[in-house]
Length: 244
Length: 301
Image (cartoon, rainbow over all chains, first blue to last red; front, side, top):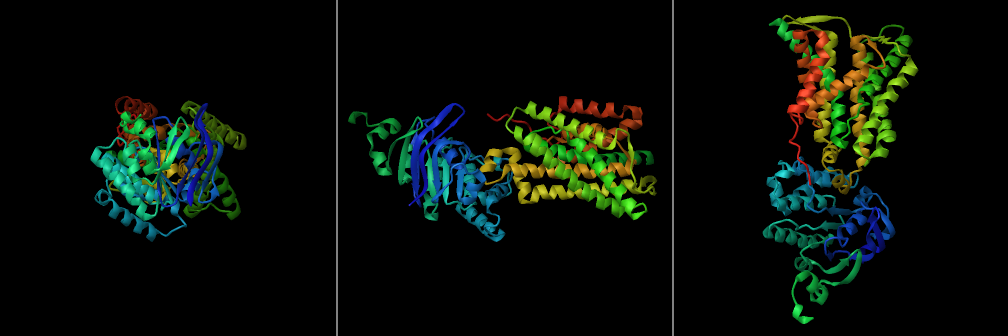
C-alpha cells in the first residue's frame, strides 16, 4: 500500500517550473530512492510534499488523505518528517534541545514520559548523541550533525521520513555510516523517501527508485532494475559504455 | 564612598527599568530581525492603560489604592499591551514577512506614530498626573538612600526577568523561539507553527514593556504620549550594548547603560545624560557591533 502518492504534481519557484507533472509513490515500510542530476527537481519534490513549495497543479496523498496545500506543521503532526540537505541542526541549541524540538509536534499525542523514552532510544541508536547531549549542535562534526538531524526527525515518530542528500559533503566513512543508519530505519517500520547523489549507494539500500530529469520522472523501477538499467549506469554510474 | 554606592544603586535601578523594555526589543530582533521602533510606544500605552485603570479603581474605591492595587493594575496592563503587541504584529508586520527589511522597518516607524498620536487624540497632548504613586518612604542602607518605590520596581523587574529567562530556556515555546531565531524554515519542518511562536514573542515583549510603563507612571508621577520615544532609543542602545538578539545580553546592556548614565551624569551634569548614552551607542556600533555577549556574526553562504 502506498503511504505517499504524488499525482501529476506541478510546482515551481516564481516563473520557473521545477516540477512538470511528477507522479510517484512510496510504499509503506520501503525505502524509495529519488535519483537525478542537479536541478532535476528532487529537492523540490520533497519540499512540495512538505508544503514548503506551493503546489501549482496535481495532488499529493498521504496515508490515504489528500493533503495538497496543507501547511507544513499539520503535515508534521500527521507523521511526515523531512531531514533537509545538510541536516540544518540548530547550531546554537544543545543537542538535547535539538532532539526535543523534533518532538515539538507531539503535544497531546504523547506524554512527556514517552518523549523521554524516545530521547533515550535515539541515544541508543546514535551513541554519539548521548555524549554530546549538552553540547551545542554546531560543535558536532558533519557526520554527527547528520545523525542528529535524522534522530531529531525521528523524534516526531514519523510514518514517512524524507531524506535530502544525507551523505552529501561527508567523508566517505561518515557517508557510509549515515546510509547504514538509513537502511536500519526499515527495521523501525519507517517509510523512507531518499534523495541521494550517490546513486550506487542509494540503490543498494533502496527497494524502489525513480529517476528525475528536468522536473519529470523518466524512469522507475525496483532498485535491482534500476541498477541494471543501461541508462542509469551510463548517466550516473559512469561505466558500461562498451554495452551501447 | 557613600556617594559612589549611591551612584551604583541609581544606575542599577535605571538599568532594571531599561532592561524590561530592552528585552522586548531584543526578543523581537532575535526572532524576526526587526527593529521594532513601536516598542517604546507600547511602553507608553502601558502607562496610559494603567492610568485609566487606576483612575477608575481609585474613583470606585474612594481612596488611594496601595501597592497591591498597583500590582493588579500592572498585570492587567501587561495583558492589554501584550494583546496590543499581538495586534500590531498581525496587521502591520505579518503581511510583510519576507518583504525587504527596510519596508518592515518603515512600517514599524509608522506603527510608532500611530500609537503616539492615537493616544494623543484619546487622552490629549498634555501630560497626565498618575493617580497612584509608589510611596514616598525611603530607608538607608550603609548610608545609601533607597526609596520604597525604587525597591519595589527593582524587585518586580527582577521577578519578570527571571520568569522570562526561565520561559525561554526551559519551555517548549522558548525552545521554539530560540530555534526560529536561527532557522525559521527548519522550524517549520519540526512542526512548529512559526507564526504563532512569533506572535507569542510579541506578546511577551509587549507585556514586559507595559509593566515598565505602569511602573514609570507610578514612579515619576506623570505620563505623556511621547514618553516612549526616548526610552525606546535607550532600550535599543541597551540591546546593542549587550548584543542584540541575546536576552541575557539585553539585561546586561541595560545595567551597563544605567551605570554609565549614572556616573556620566555625576561627572558631567544631568544635561549630558542622553549625549553620554547615545555616544556609547555609537561607540559600540563602531568598535563592537555584536555587543558584549553577542556572537561573532558569520555570513552564511
